Figure 1: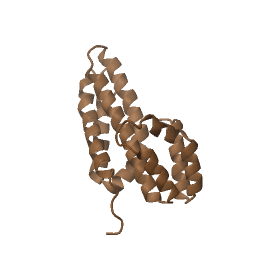
Figure 2: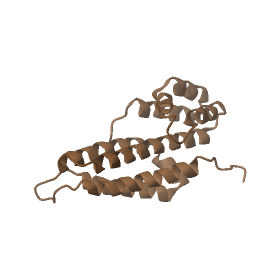
Figure 3: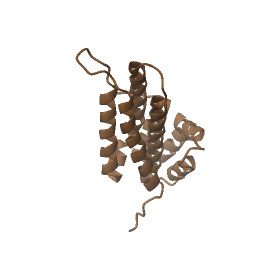
Figure 4: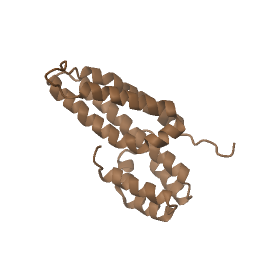
Length: 184
């Protein structure tokens, strides 16, 4: 299990406060925490407006909308990491073992963020959740360290599942960026 960083820790605090219906506490944690700082740092990267939408949902005591905004944000973080991993693994040079190690580091980071919102994703779009988990498992298989009996590592094989992760999360972000009507 990947270790938490300041963003994931702040997310958990905000999430627990929202679940306890302590929206004032959640808003304060959001306003002063690493989660909002990361949203601001990525404000130029789609989807736009996450910080404002998250704040508005917290002020409106709308736990479902807070969860949706945070799901979109962490899906975007995981997508961006998958795209960057694919880009780096496409670059020539380095030993296969070194490139596989790079793939493992990216997979750990992707999972750190994706795992936080997998349940929320599965509740909204089970096919995407399954597709991401299957692609992640496949990528992990290709990134495993070489043992004496195993075939040599081919880090280029990691790229296809990373691309599928990025595509699935991009589609999820696009479809989730418009709130569903609750009164229908």
